Image 1 (cartoon, helix red, strand yellow):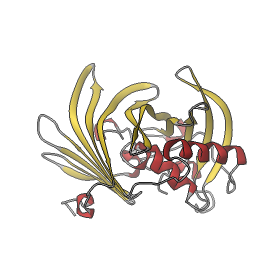
Image 2 (cartoon, helix red, strand yellow; image 1 turned 180 degrees about the vertical axis):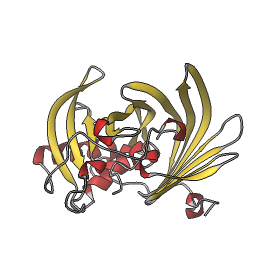
Image 3 (cartoon, rainbow, N blue to C red; image 1 turned 120 degrees about the vertical axis):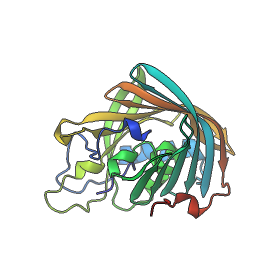
Image 4 (cartoon, rainbow, N blue to C red; image 1 turned 45 degrees about the horizontal axis):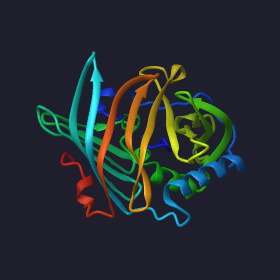
Length: 262
């Protein structure tokens, strides 16, 4: 089953292809009115009452990762086409590394190697990196469950916590928690603060949280986008993106989301 949050901020940081949350619903989950209200208010906060979702996005900035006590920063360009096609081109000392998420498939292509990505290896590289697109998809996908968890805290900040569950398409006994996603929203501004899924390198029953945290929201053609996005595993910061520019409805070709190794 494809994770509804859609899918590692950098391929080198991914632990495994299995996404999992803490609980599994036994039956299809309805949209709790309070949870639905939080998500509708969040989308309105990002896009205004008309909710004009851009057809394409072209963003650029700096990608910084920390590994073994060493911090490295590289230029990054992000392309999005619709709600299913995403491409990241990250510069590096050996050349450009590209990650493509297109529909249900993902690929990594580096200067000296390339390979297909497992579903869990793309968290932070797909629709979830742009909350406006993700919220719009949730609200326009039939059968998506929304559960109100209640007030919570993220980094000392009071938030509203909602659980998102996928449409009930799994066969009997199949773990639906593979696609569960946690959303944390600032109750004052309405903007998403964090998106969380769960993962473990070997045993999904012992999963750990993978978080995308959003800060520095700025208006782009009347829509709000986080210009700072950080990625952490089990509370340990791993990498972050600082965007310097975002162009909406930019000229983006469908061929940009085709892997040359196909």
